[in-house]
Length: 285
Image (cartoon, rainbow, N blue to C red):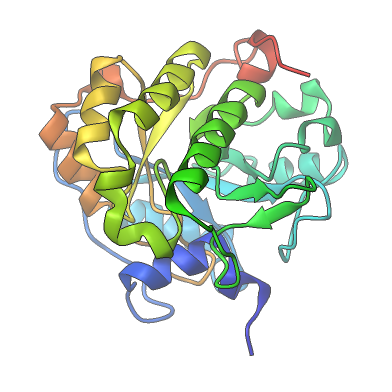
């Protein structure tokens, strides 16, 4: 029987690349890069508590950013933080732990759920473009097997516009799963993500000061990352794991960091209080 998490983003992505056996913690120590290694995309779950996360973080020598889904209750996850009572409770749960505190914002209607003062207590806010809207405005989880993206060109035009809208509209610190496309088009990734489609995304990230996640699921590719480096974007690493009791290694992230010659100046660091995106950005209504 499938659970909600079976068809979550991490269920889809981790299944696609094949993680270690259930319950295993990756103990790989990251190679020296000249800057602290942080995994900003780790979730808790029934088999992975905050204490498990702290232990795994210490074992690996990698600091974790711990996330919970946040937004309206229309988002179907076991836990969705949806108001100024639930979010502070989440923050308090992580208080005093050697982790960064974050949320994975859902869809584009999450901001009114929370006050600016409460959001500013987070270290970071992360989202992706994998939940879109259909012609009626209803949210659509594009990673689900039942989703039909239709014809490639029309879909890609929609995805680029949707991605830019998300980046420009939301007070984000990190944009996750960059250049993800549905499995139907995966074999044509390089053909579909041409510069005419990637440049608007790079430009939106640059305009908003949003960091780009290098995803352990091998997203995005090196060509896009080179464009991002030339644009002087900030980067971060993300494994999108933990909730199933497993922590994915950051091999691909580290490989890309070496290929790009990333230094500490290129890496995302959570903004100080008073300089959070929710506090400094003029948001689109």
